Image (cartoon, rainbow, N blue to C red; front, side):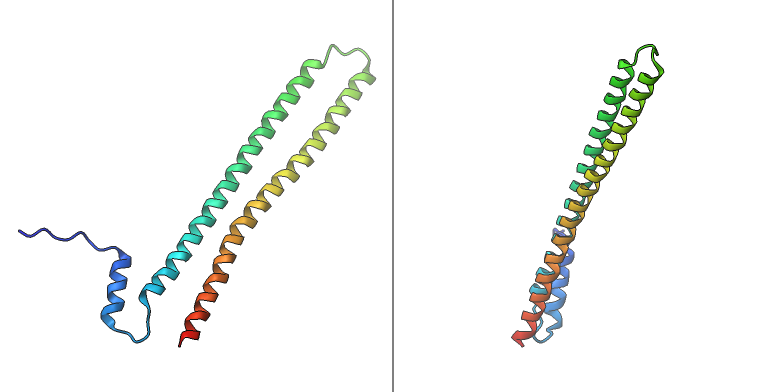
Length: 142
């Protein structure tokens, strides 16, 4: 029994279909290349988004660890209440530091998310710009 050839990939089948139809002035390979570039851009954009999400998650983990360490340090520094004014002063200072740190951390996370989103969108925007140039060039050939 003759060995059957391995099944063709979708791209091979599409390419053969285009050749078999014998459509005038259709460059099937150019169409395939165009869509391959689109898929590569989507993949690159997804990788950039995933890397950005990973960076945000790692930074948030660091922030939580830092906050836990700070709370632990502050709790250990409290001694038996002596002067109520000193205790209130320490609590107010802790609240102020916590608030400032939270604002700084939120701003940093927002910047990380913005940078990640911008990078992902730029990859797609560049591909769209290139795709439009490819389409225009295809029409200019005719």
